[in-house]
Amino acid sequence: MKEQTFTITAETGVHARPATLLVNKAGQYQSEVEVSYNGKTVNLKSIMGVMSLGIPKGAEITVKVDGNDEEDAMNGVAEVIKEQLGE
Image (cartoon, rainbow, N blue to C red):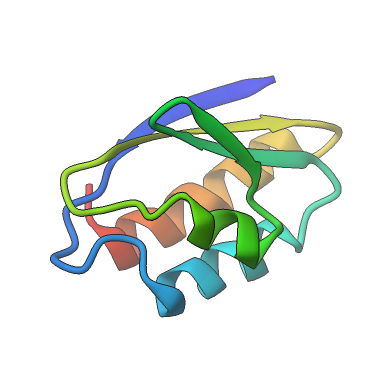
């Protein structure tokens, strides 16, 4: 299992467009990918789950990946977070 924490620096936080990009990226991998914020954890492959977190600017999120391709999955998700949401 891999785990990494990110700080969201985008002015609008995790809104629909970057959330969709994250969900699409996570969906490319077999591993289970979860995101946690404010004590709640959801499947990063679920747009409704990600949007339900309401992640604002300045939030710290934790991404956990577990599975056969966890290294690639973490790298892919981390790249989208850094490009779209700052860090």
